[in-house]
Structure formats: structure tokens, C-alpha cells
Image (cartoon, rainbow, N blue to C red):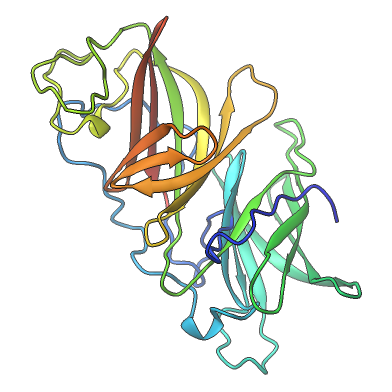
Amino acid sequence: MKNFIAIGNWKSFGFLCLALFAGLFIFSCSDDDDDIPPGTTASSITPYNCTSCSDVPQGLPENDNLAKGIYKGIFPSGTLAINYKNEVPNASDIGSANGVVYYKNKVITLTEYPEIIISAGRPVYTLFEGSMGDTRVQLYFSVNEDGSNPQVSDFSISDPTMPSERSISCVIFKERSNALLEAFEGNYFRSNTVVPGNPNPSVPDDTSSIPDGTTARVDPGLVHPDANATNVGSVKLVLSRAEGMWLLYKVMDGANGSVLDKGSIDDGTLISDITGKRVSYLRGDELNYSENVSSGTFFLHAERKR
């Protein structure tokens, strides 16, 4: 197995590309996962709330320290989730496994196949496959008996309408019964309009103006892209408020490949472990950030999808 990313022992925080399988995962899906437009509620002080998203983990407490459970995570162009025998509370039962990949506004159901590879001293690898129309997905999933070190390897997507993605990097974590994992998807925008002053001051200034001419809101984390902002990239992010942790893939237009970042959540602010800088504000089920650059203003806007 090759080309997998394992992020080690984040407080046993288990992430896998978020997704929801009907009857298995109580998530919502969106037809606009890769097309979140600039905000149209710049004068609102109420953050977005995903009313169809689950507020409780689907991982069973009986499976917190077993291989069985719910696994969620992200890859550069989508999210996914695997139910690995989570519905079986009796550890002696074999159970079944399945999952879902959310990719380019498609919901692709994954089915467990009997091909299993067992190596001495290594985890068991389970093959999952699925398709929707002409798009086919294949990946191997592995996890230790105690639920640690989940991995996705040999992950490929065959899509005739897009360049085929093979050996895709995917970060996967386990959802514990006391730590809900949430998936956010959104975009980066660039506007030629420069926000007067700092669009995200440490002490909010409710007299400065923002691009649409309204007054700045009390909370700087709620500044949205203006209506003329150009989409310049995409972001897929998974986080746990209970664990105070997040991880994202960023893909920018014209860039070669994706950028992986991770960090902590400090009083509603996402701070990068890699750069030490603020990445976004978390307000309700909405992520926002903006900063002035030489050509205007750079924005991040994302919303919880499941």
C-alpha cells in the first residue's frame, strides 16, 4: 500500500473524509460543495447554522477503543466517511463496513469487497469500491485493533470529465463517541477592493466600512467576500470542537498540488501549528477570514456541510 498520509496520535482524534451514508451517517449533502459563492449577507451578524447537520457523534462508545467505528477525513477535492462495523456493539460479531465519498457534487457509495490483505505485524487492509455514472472510486482502508493509526491507501478516482486522480492523499481520523467531527467546504476569494483598515482587527471597529458599504460588524470573523470577489481556490476542512483541533487541504488556482495545514482552535479562532498564524474565525457553522494584500483583499469563506 502506498501514498497515504497518517497524522499521528492527535489525542486519538479520528478524522476521515467526511461523508454520510444513508442509514449510517447522519450528515447532510450539498449540490454546491465546490461552489460556495461570495456572501450576500454582509450586514448580518448571525453566522450560518447547518440545521441538517448532526450535533452528536455517530461513533458508538462501545467501539471507542476498537477498530470498529466511524472514520472521517478529507482529500484535496472532497471528503469521505467509512462506517467500519460501527453498528455491531458485540466485539465477537463480524459486522459489515461501507462508506461514502463526496466528490465534485457527487455522492458515491462505497461497498466493502472481500479482498483483504494481511501481513505479519501489519493492519488488515479492506478494499472499498464505488461508482456513480462514469466516476469510479477505489481505496484500501486499514486500522489497528484498538482503533489507532487509521489509514487510506491506494486511493484513486476515475472521472472521464476530469483528469483522473490516482494515489490521492487522504487524511483519516476516528470519531470518538465524545468528539464529533465536522466537515467544512468552501473557497478562497480575491477582491480588487481593499477593506479600509484591517478587515480583522484585534479590537473590532464598528465605524470602519466594508466592501458593500455597510458598517463593519462587531465580530470581525463575520466579514464575507464582496459580491465582485473572484474565486481563486478551494478548501476542505475537518475539525473537532471537543478536541480543539482542525485539519485542511487548500488548493489554489494555478498552483501545483495541494497544501495541508493543521492546528488548534483557540476561542473561536483557528491557529496553524505550522505557521503559528490565524487561519480563520469559526462562528456557528461558518468559517471566515480576510486580509488586505497588495492587489486588494483575500477572503476565506466556508460552511459546514455535514
